[in-house]
Every structure is written in C-alpha cells, then in structure tokens.
Image (cartoon, rainbow over all chains, first blue to last red):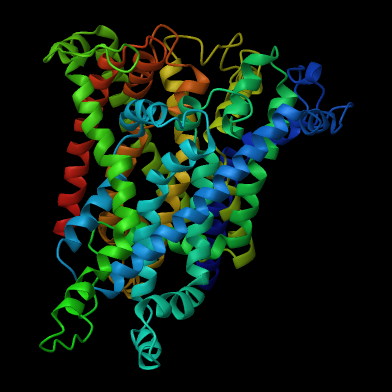
Length: 281
Length: 313
C-alpha cells in the first residue's frame, strides 16, 4: 500500500517535471535563440544545421550598436521619456490618490469611473486626434509630445494602485500631523509619501516599463532620429540595413536590459501589485 | 490590473462648521478638487478632447491635412463599412482575439497549475517561474524581431519541423497568405500567456486547502477535483481576465505592424492596422476616424460586459 502511494507520487512528480520542462522550452528557447544570434556573425545566422554557439562567437554586434551615435541616441531618448513619464505620473497620481483616499466629495465616483474607463480606450482611436493635437500645439517630434501622450496609459493604473495603497495606511498618521498644526498637504508629503515608498516603487517600475515599451505613439508622433525611441530603433534596423540580424538581436537585448533588471530587482513586489489588481479587479 | 470599484472612501474628516466661517468651509470643500486638478486636466486633454475630435473628424471630410473641412454626414462610415478590406480586418481581428484569448487561458492555467505544485521545491519553482514569465518581459518590437528570425523560411523553426519530417521544404510562415494569420496568432499567444498565468497563479494560491481535502475525502480523483473545485473557484478571475484580454488583444497593433504589416494581401489586416494605414499611409484621416470610432464602439461593448460581470461579483 505504502509503496503504491510512493510510486504514484514519484510518477506524478515525473509528470509535472516533464510538463514544466516542455513549457519552459516553449517559453525560453526563443529567448535563448535571440541571445545566441546576437553573438554570431551575420553570415552564420541561418547556417544549416543551426548551432547555438558558432566558431565566430563575439560581441561585435554589440560594439556596432554601442559605437553608433544614432542607436545611442534612441537609448538616450527612451531613458529621457520613460523617466519623465514615471516622475510626472507618480506626482500627479499621488495627489489624485490622496484626494480619493482621504476625502469624500461630490462626483467622486464619477471621476473615478472616468479614470478607470480611460484604460479601455483603444490607442488606435486616440492616435488620430493626438496627431492633430500634437501638431497643432507645436509638440510634434518633441519629448513633451511623447511624455504627455504616454501618460494616458500610465496615469489611470497609477492612480488606482496608489489610492489602494493609501487606503491601507491608517488615518491616525495624518491626524498626528494635524494635531501639530500641519495641514493635509504636509501630512501627505511628510508622512504618507515616505511610508508609501515601496508601493510607489512598484507603480513607478510598471510606469517605466509601459513608457519604455510604447510603440504606436512613438511611431506616429516623432519623425527624426534625434527623437526616436528604442522600439522604433529596433524596427528601423529591420529595413535600413539589409537585415543585420545579429545587430538587431544585440539591439533587442540592450533594449530589454532596463526592463529585465527592474523586473528581477522588484519581482516580488511587482507581481504582488499586479495580481492584487487583477484578482480583486 | 484594473480596479473597477471606486476606491473606498474613509469617513469625512471632522469639519467644525462654526458660524462666520463659511468661507473657510467652502475652501475646505474645494481642497480635494485641488488635489485632483492635474489629473482632471490631463484626462480632459488626453481623452475627452481627443474623443470629441475623432468623432467630429469622422463626420467631416478634408480633416487634418487639408484646410477646409466640410460636413460629410455618415459618408465615411458607409465607406468604411462597405470596404472589403475593413470587413476582412474585422474577421481577422475576431479570429485573432478569440483564438489568442482561449490559448492564453489554457496555457496560463496549465502553467499556473504546474507552478503551483506541491511536488517541487521553492528554488526550482522560482527558476521555472522566471522562465515562464520571460516572454512577457520583452517589448513587442523585440518579440517581432525574435519571431521573424525564428519563422524565416530558412529559420530554425523550419529546420526543426523539417528534421522531424513534418514539412518537406522551408515554409514562409509570415509571408504565406494562408498561414500568416495563424503565425501572428501563435506569436501573440507566446507573448501574452504570462499575464494570465500570473493572475491565475495568485488565484490558485487563494483557494482554501480544505476544499481539496474535503474533495479527496469523498474519494474524488485529480480530474474531478479540477472540475469541481479549481475551475469554479477560479471562475471570477478567468472571466474578468478573459474579457480584459479580448480588449487588450483587439488593441494589438505593434506586433502585426512589425511582423507582417497586415499583409500578405490583407491576410493579417486587423482593425488597428487598417485604421493606421487609412490615416498615416493613405492620409485619409476622415475615413480613419470613422474606423477609429467603430473600434471604440466595439471596445465599449466588451467593456460593458466587463463592468457588468464585475458588478455581479
């Protein structure tokens, strides 16, 4: 009896491990191939039979990208836009979250419903009027044009998450400041914001990722190389040269590093925040 | 990701309303609006005004690029709705989003259940979890590049299929009108299942263990426990993630644009690529606006089901 249970357990374990490995190959092999191709010479990319590591293993493709002023400018642009979007989003969302969390006021539910519904509006519907608007305001092909439009994606999520975070903080914290003669404003910046740093980091990381990865607005609202961001830069490599596959892969790896690093550093908090939103939804 | 419920409001702060201090009371009432003003301003500029603009463009002609807009009534809508390319895009989008969402759910659930197993140690599970989340961490531009490399006629996917004897010669997955839609759907499945998986994993961890113990007591097998405990418990997460995924997938533009551009011969044309081409390749901004408003209406129907489902919970 005992042995059958043990055998069944071993069998079940073998089954699960087999399943996990197959799934892992499905998820991981394309990424491994991306990495492997970035170290090849372009002539070996489609060699038959395919090899993971070829004789000409080198970092040449990376040096090509890193030595190219145009590509570096894409990275600089992406960093500028994503950092600005993150800081502005957090600033605006903290103020809004404070209002939702600590006050009751007319139209509160309506305003909240509008903010939530922004998340469902298709970007393709917005991009046409944005084009008209951004050109009209003289923001076409500028950082502010991109930063402003990216916030339509980042702000609703940030407000919802920060409101939820502030709701978990006891109101006695604010009161202690008010007893000392402080106002709501000082309570927010002296007490609530410093305590909320872990939550703000999670929201900030997600905001950064959205902005770093954004494609449609960057494609339509910028025109010249000195304003293009990394996703557009990767796409431009596909047409520009006659398919320098190894450089495209190297640029892809370099372009993914910020998001991968942020994810690995904040993994636990990040997944927690995401699922808290999705499961409770 | 989305919270459809209004943030819980704390009871109002004690307001000492004393006679002769009405002005300060009014000022105090305006305080929350002060905190909200940047948000409201941004929402008006980034959503309200643009939606009004796109609706008004859709009823005009000669917008944006020409200087003399004229009222056109429903002409743009008639043009879009009778355009065979638009109807093809509608059909492709329906196939793309429904197949993607079902596959995301099936894969996400299967992977989440395997990651939730009691049979493996914490470290092994943590490693697998990172590998399983990998596809989700790459931006769409990178995913497009990876799969154009893998699915190339002389790429490694064809090599493996050929070695297994499944195909005789290199298949141009993204370039063959009969296969391209399935190829981009497959790529989208690969890139999108992790989000489902993460949510379902959290859902699985939230199922009380005694439910399984009670079921085991009754002598149920693995499959019965799955059908009668796991699925019913996960149902709310599955339904809300499913509707959200339909909405998000219908908005997928970058992946299509960078793998097939909607081709070959409109085989992978989606509502998003159709609209984009009308605007930024054809410069038919009025037609594009009509298509964009139709896309918005279709999304609102999906969002309506989402909100109704959330209310029921």
